[in-house]
Length: 301
Ligand code: RIB
Image (cartoon, rainbow, N blue to C red; front, side):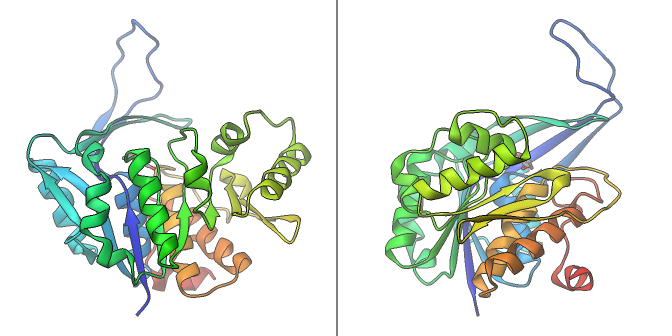
């Protein structure tokens, strides 16, 4: 059976629904608060696991009720918990998600995610070694991400980095990537400039791809996803759906992309599948709420 290892964050999402964000110094009434499962690492692992592939998640929670709830949820999602450490002297990561009429704004307090260090990678190296795909993001320390990517590459495991939330990428990270999957604004940060229009954006993708031996896939929200292959940019349009909540769409994309790559799909097919999954994910509330199972996704393929 194919295997995926995700290294990343586990958060409790406190989702505050409000018509708009307050400005500094202002107090406003919101509508609801929901406690939802989140964290980019956990979300990506759930998206992959719902495809029916064996999925391990390397990460840390605190020794508290949120941590317990997160572990219970991941166990119900058939995720291998043996690679998740419970840290005694800190709290579980928390994300305050402001869910407004137009879009979301998120503030993350990392807590235990900061304790996912190189030793956690060494501790669970036996899971990375036989994996088909290793997937990570940037809500755990950069040194850990870099170290884990290097190890995965040494074992010949295919590597994917979702550079979110964006931080400057050290050469040691880029050098060990097979796939890099920023969204549009993360890609602008990667190249250090804003794009004027779609042609400029595509030129930026080609330019970056010439300089790096990495498959570049940029997720572009309602426009779909663009990728570079043989010196050309291709865009797979997104599926039209009724949007309920966009939180976790990028995570769904990455989890399903990892599955598709592990299963040997070509780049175009993998991007198509991941894009369809991401579109379906935004039709329900919460980061993990709308993530499709493999059976649901197959109906749309
Ligand atoms: O990508 C969405 C996720 O980002 C949320 O679940 C939140 O926890 C933050 O990590």
